[in-house]
Length: 121
Image 1 (spheres, rainbow, N blue to C red):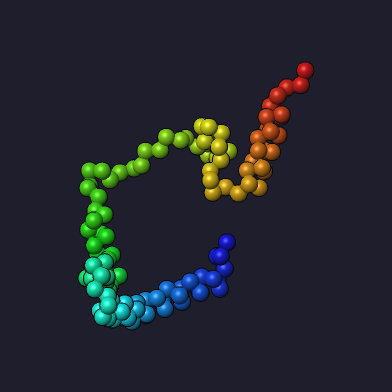
Image 2: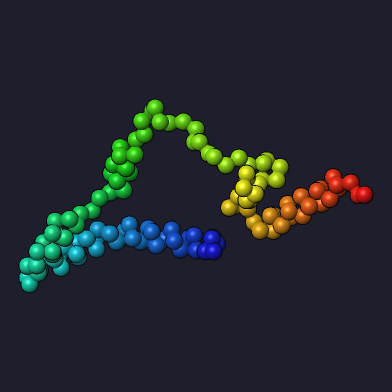
């Protein structure tokens, strides 16, 4: 659910608003933490932690951490073999993305073909 254009637009605009308000919220958080009466050890730790990090820097850091050695790059080994015609795997299961109506339709076709191949006595 929630895949309509309206909801996508609303999510996008909420993200923009969060991006715009993040620096203001950080200033407000730091101001609250530096007020008198907040001599709590926990609050001082949070005050040191609270910093704004630009998304570009985060992405660069993630890229550096996520580098994969060249010797491990290759084709994924998948154990399940799938019939291209019926889309069933070796355990007789359909893929997760398949609609139940499509599954029912393919099941009917399989039964119909199975009955045709049997010779009546």
